[in-house]
Image (cartoon, rainbow, N blue to C red; front, side, top):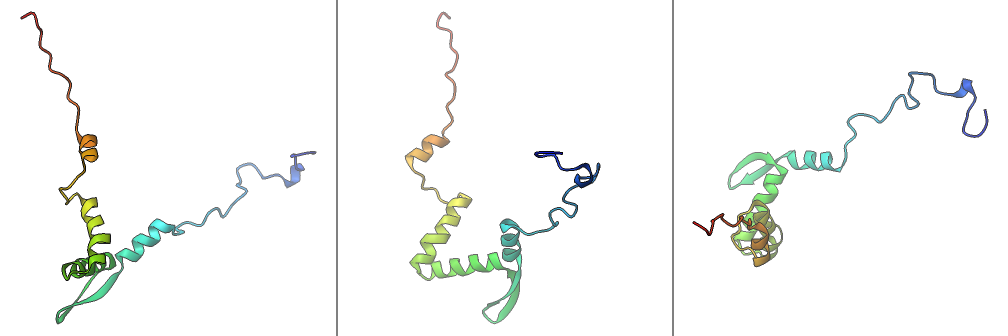
Length: 113
């Protein structure tokens, strides 16, 4: 007994955890919530037909459609970011080109021969 020494009767029993229930399994974090929300299916009307598609696909389709109609905000904010993330743009800066360049070692050429 004493400082930081509880009585033997109040201590945890050997082989038993102090947190028996522990953290509940399956608790959603931000990543799993986002994944679940973006993968939900929604009904989307295309012309006279309706079809089911994931939310993320519907968002991308609507942004691309708005960008095609000339909406500057839809074009430059998300669509261009998506194109850059997927590597579809050919315009890269000189700094990015320097980072991507691989330095090859100098070829070995003996001068005496």
